Image 1 (cartoon, rainbow, N blue to C red):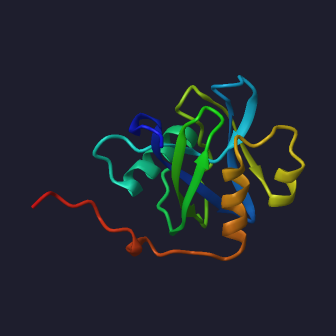
Image 2: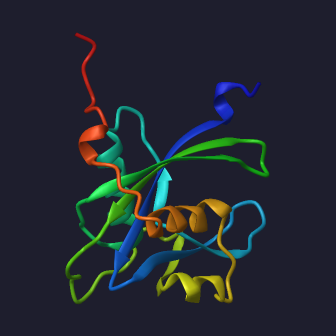
Length: 155
């Protein structure tokens, strides 16, 4: 059983616009290789899940979008021995601003791929969670945001 320091709560964005998915190019922290990932990151202490997702999306892409739903929770036992629990949010914008760019220096580029193009991309995905989330999205699974209980205070 892992100790709690190896458990991570993360959020990821499946952004679909005109049947293409937004991916970020970043360097894998373990291998140093360039990889593709959804805009994603850790939930910070005391942060609401939706707020965390919107923050990560803004930092990694420069986009200010509102989620339309969520896909569920993915689970990964990573090569580093850590366990990642990832809440996958859906963003389906009807339009995009003319300019947007990463604010996080760890993000090297933004890419739009269809699912077929992603399967043939020169760069690998960071983990199977990337393609698994797109697969779930393409299956038509949509959970309402109302199914996420809001953050409550202890009283």
